[in-house]
Image 1 (cartoon, rainbow, N blue to C red):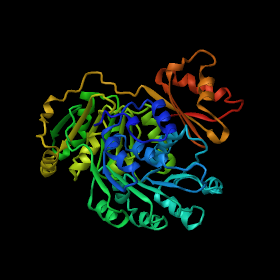
Image 2 (cartoon, helix red, strand yellow):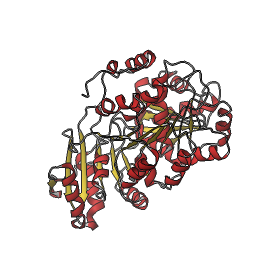
Image 3 (tube, rainbow, N blue to C red):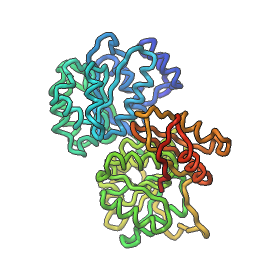
Image 4 (cartoon, one colour):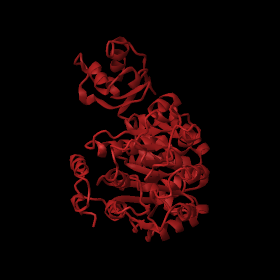
Amino acid sequence: MNSAPFSTLSLRPELLTSIATLGYESMTPVQAQTLPHLLSGKDLIAQARTGSGKTAAFAIGLLNKLEAQAYCTQALVLCPTRELADQVAAEIRRLASTIPNIKLLTLCGGKPMGPQLASLRRDPHIVVGTPGRILKHIEKETLHLNTVETLVLDEADRMLDMGFHDEIMQIIGKTAVSRQTLLFSATYPDGIKKISDIVQRDPVDIRVEASHHSPDIDQIFFQVEKSERVEMLFKVIAHYQPKSSLVFCNTKQQCQELAEELRQHDLHVLALHGDLEQFERDQVLTQFAGKSSSILIATDVAARGLDVKELAAVINFELSHDPEIHIHRIGRTARAGSKGLAVSLFTDSERRRLQAIEEYQGSSAEIASTSTLKIPKNLKLYPPMITLFVNGGRKEKVRAGDLLGALTASGEIAGEQIGKITLFDKVAYVAIEQKVAKLALTILADGKIKGRKFRVRLLR
């Protein structure tokens, strides 16, 4: 079923063109199972992990029936975080590229209201955003949802975890009863069923990947003493030396403390948790995605919306209370056909959690001895890149090509030595190879970008 081509569906020709242009050759399991129901207008509740193709599924569904000539808001997608909203908006824009005059607007917190209010003078066709900011615009009467035909709750489980239940219900109350309501979730807590019962009409219930064991992931467990947990985590990282690893903690306080302890082992570590300001969060995510840091420590909620294509390893500093969340965590590695590594540390008091994971995935855990972990001599675990911070972004009309051109103009730095370039409204980040980082800093700080001087510094 997952090999069926998109051409088997009743899709508008422009959508089939953009699907082919994006290189989507056949449907993923979640697309094959949800799209026929989506296209027939049915309400849907679908459980599928991040990276399974669900965004494209609901994007195709809402775009297929969108009327570009009708200047009203026809689709609303609610996401738990700004990062996820940005990713969803980018995916919808890619798929909508062949349909003329589609207006999509992202409305999230952490950004000024002014530009959003200006953009809302004409109703967008599609709105993607976070519950808090969407509700603010509803209260200001700058966003009108009575014409919404498709409502999507993306990562609905995380929105509930983050305490957005009341906001979600208030937002839904402003939409037409006749709308199509789609709930997508990585896990299936009781709260999802309660919301579904209230806001959906005879929803089709789809659970993708009933098998919770991935042959592409080497999953290893180590039993440790509580007092040795940090030291064993360092040994795991030193032994396997993954190019990028996401370390999960259960609390934000633990994230920060663990990052500080690992830095004492001369590791470049970043922490991602709910206490970070949006600016700090953007910076952390940009450094990790740009390979300027090899280790990111995060809570489950904070890691949602993390867009890293190749994640070499997922490490559980301690086991999750919920086996579903454990499977979701480790599913972040072994994407796009690559082999992945999942390592979990547990103490004797976490035995019940381990048994729950074994029951859920239908297989015994491979428990290895910590004596197999070896720290190589002359260990050096430095990330390959370092990030340059540029105090100018899209608002100053700075483009990725301008930064690339400024760095390579003299011929001292080659294009392949420059990594990911990330632009925000007022700042930009450039990943650059460590060995030419100081040279790159000098070139940008002493030179000009688009005829203007900008403040530039290295992020350590």
